Image 1 (spheres, helix red, strand yellow):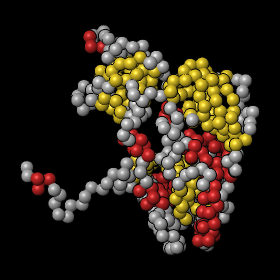
Image 2 (tube, rainbow, N blue to C red):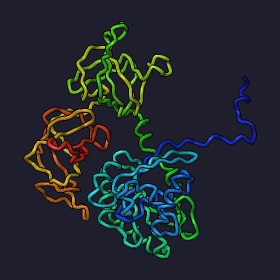
Image 3 (cartoon, one colour):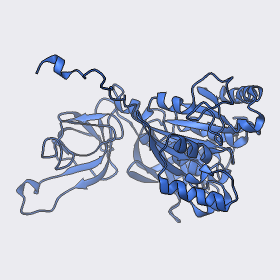
Image 4 (cartoon, rainbow, N blue to C red):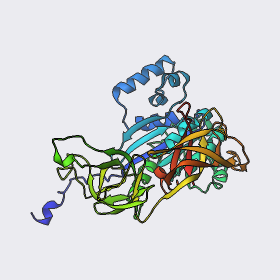
Amino acid sequence: MSAIEHLPTAGTPAAPEDHGLLRFLTCGSVDDGKSTLIGRLLYDSRTILADTLHAIERTSQKRGLSAVDLSLLTDGLQAEREQGITIDVAYRYFSTGTRKYIIADAPGHEQYTRNMVTAASTADLAIILIDARRGVLTQTRRHSYLAKLMNIPRLVVAVNKMDLVDHAQARFDEIRADYEAFASQLDIEVRFIPISALNGDMIVDRGDNLGWYEGPTLLELLEAAPAAGTIRRDREGAALRFPVQYVCRPQDSANPELHDFRGFMGRIEAGRVAVGDRVVVLPSERETRVREIRLHESGPAGDGKLPFALTGQSVTLLLEDDIDVSRGDSIVGSEQLPTVTRRIEAMLCWLSESPLDPRRKYLIRHTTRESKALLDGIDYRVDINSLEHQAAEQLAMNDIARVAFRLAQPLAVDAYADERATGAFIVIDEASNNTVGAGMIV
């Protein structure tokens, strides 16, 4: 076949460029319009199923509304629909011609800050909504600080409800200046956009009411944003991090190949691994090489064997040497080792109604490993309004503080700023088995 036969014929449209998956979070204070914004995105991008649209039309009519209440698309719990608020994190999915999206709608109430932390842990971008009438509020600052703390690389501040302030540019500029004064203390880059989620101005279409704004629409910003997960997955020199979830020892006496089979199953949280790579098992610090990488019996080689694997893939590793490896151990690259320690320092978000008790033992869950822990001190608590560091002897619900824990078992950790998966942990109450805190290692 000649080279010219590979070229598209005249008039054949080129395939749209795939910008990859983008996970983004909407957050802010109560009634800033987060759910309506997501509903408008889904509605104007024509990704709502007909039966779903009919259902929210009927609910809107029962409430006596003249127009469809698009916030009902994300307020899925009965309690949320009755109150017109978001309690749980609602996830929605949609796609355009060039990108797929996963949207997390975080609740605005202060008592549900823990839900926002959960949603932020996997987000590549955060949209901070501000009601144009009320301006920057305490919860706006809290969610912005958490977005920075959770290492979300991009923030978009959307000043919503511009229709209720006569689409005034002066009001938008005032809010922008107020937020920039706060954001300068966090050292974060922010894009600002005026919108009306109710009317759809500057969401997907530009609308007719904000002609003084010359920047991109919200969807155009989302389409252009790089997916941080893709950047982390492909960056050069990323260190291998493979927490072991399960030791696979098949029991099949009829198959001699499985008699001595010992595979270590898990997900590659960072980096890449190839057959023949030298690796280290932690915390034992035993060194060996990767003999095989297996995916599934329907793999490209027919037998499920892979020459290499990348971040995000769940695989089974077979090692050359017979090393004692258990669930909770980590297989890492031999040249970029994490820190193996019995003491961690972290920024902690306290999520429980019961305060942090310095005298109690807690359980730290880090990747697939658990360890009992004692609080080793509270360095300071962060005042969300001023960002000042304050002395504290205990933490109440939604407090954010720098703390230290002493551990019964060693953990192989990275700084959260370097690797999300191996730099994060949760704190569990042993008595109730409830998650009471979320930490980011510094």
